Length: 209
Image 1 (cartoon, rainbow, N blue to C red):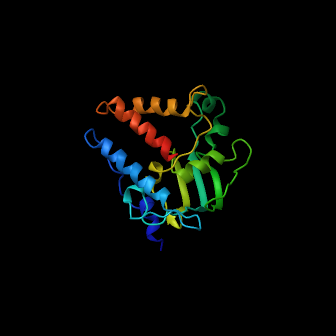
Image 2 (tube, rainbow, N blue to C red):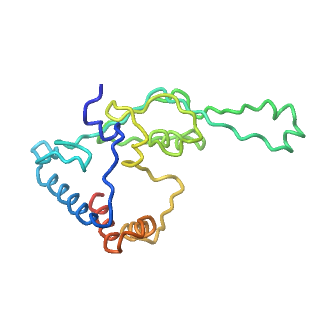
Image 3 (cartoon, helix red, strand yellow):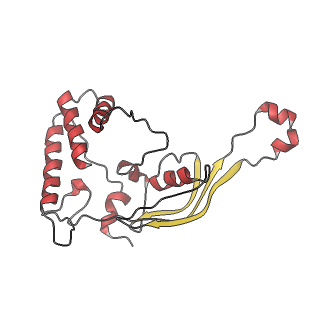
């Protein structure tokens, strides 16, 4: 059984929802809790909080996270050949398999605080493995096996607290980090948020990173 440190990932608990009237108060509470966490450090380097804070996703000691995956098999549906190919090469293309196995019995583990490089030729399944681990872009896949964080099976909620930079990113090389975040804030945050609230959110994200 996994301990309670996994609960923010395994449970279906939703994050606090921001609104127009309480957004600034929410920002202040988050920043204060982060400052409190950083001010209370023990001699062994672990960060402790003076009180439980559910808004940060943990209670007491900041938990390190390890990820492991076991017996991962991934199958994708192969697009059907065009009508012209099936007409001209009937026997060859009618016998083409409709399902392709992309990953077969893949296992691995990454301990907290370590770096892992996934290497392979083009088409070997590196991006597919990353999508499986991050639980992203998997709607067209049949996935077998288990992925765990601290021995706790992941669920779709993992997408709200994790991400990775894909091969084809949407970043503009000439923009700074703050300019990128500002653009996203004005693009994604609803009309109910003022410009001041959008910039407060940008500064909060920069501080968290």
